[in-house]
Image 1 (cartoon, rainbow over the protein chains, first blue to last red):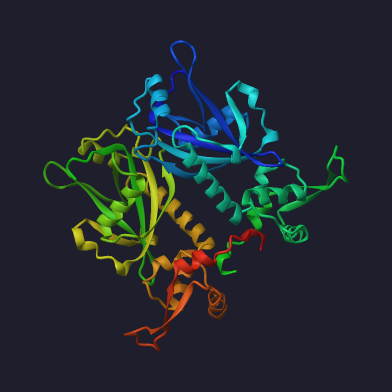
Image 2 (cartoon, helix red, strand yellow):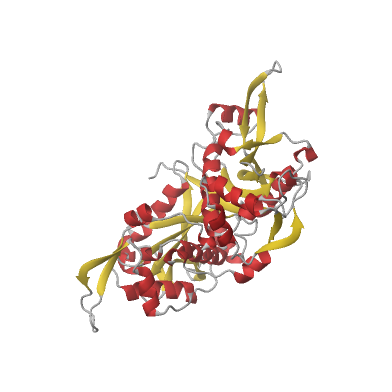
Length: 245
Length: 245
């Protein structure tokens, strides 16, 4: 990799959402700047991201960042918005961080935002020893750079997509129960659904495939497992005018 | 404006769609490079766009470009995707154009794509004497830079949005007939709707307001005019799980 050159004004920020069957989390990275005496000048958190290499596309950069952090490929990934406000890197900690890294805090950096969806249990975060961890979205405080804005815009885009297309499955393990599916929608849309009504509606989805398998190792009566078939979804989707319904 | 500085690596491209009651058009600009003897070195077309000023946001840049070309403010405008492929400015004409303009064709330029929707009749293109014109989307040939890709991605994003949200109204005059409304959807989605069924469905939209006014100056029996109320739409929209319906 040493002969590849990073572009110093185009970056990709990835908002990596992970569902742990109870809550929605986001992957954050520790940003700690050491003072000359070895103490912490400051320590805060940012989203995950990186500059792009001169020879790669922005999608390739996003895939690389995701693989680097999670060890996974073919994660659900969507470009949702680009951020380039003149003051986006100008908070005090951001300036210190950039200067310490021999970068010019007054140079405008454009960042292309992607969000990714996965089940936290699929990921082994320690695989490359990066300083990252899951944090419940509800507990996220002030982040570095303009990353609070990027996170909130990612949530808006993700919720909007979730309403129109079946992407909730991406936050679950490959095999899941209907209760887990209902939980995903309830948590992310901050609502509750009537259990019978929800099951009646999802029962109509041809792309939700019941398996001849049940949960294992649960205290309660094990529930049936299901899988989502993107192939069936793509083949059966109707491009109806939903707002006319 | 002379003291404002343009950023030389961040640009905004606007795909300005205009509906003329028969077809969907896009605003294109003539790009003609003169040779030393005054003849045309080449002449082709591009979408409309510009670099951003160092002190403006990308949305402010898009608004400025739209106003500059159409004289209109508060046009429907949406950021849909960002383009930064390493080879996006490397076709022969693009290199010549950039070199002639004293720009480095090997410098990576990231372009944030917006699409805008309006009725062509609202615009007086001549207002600033720019070299722009409407072209039916179906008749667009090879464009400069990566603008064919930007146009096709804008069409995908616009159609996808049209399916889920009532943005078709933005392509019509402020007052329109139900036939005109049906035409917009038929043209853009490349389909036909049964007239009675379409009217039954749009009749349920609380945000489609019938007016006590009829068409004027038409040969046939004048039809009733309607308007779209974004205010009513925002207040009555239900964030239902459309794909569950």
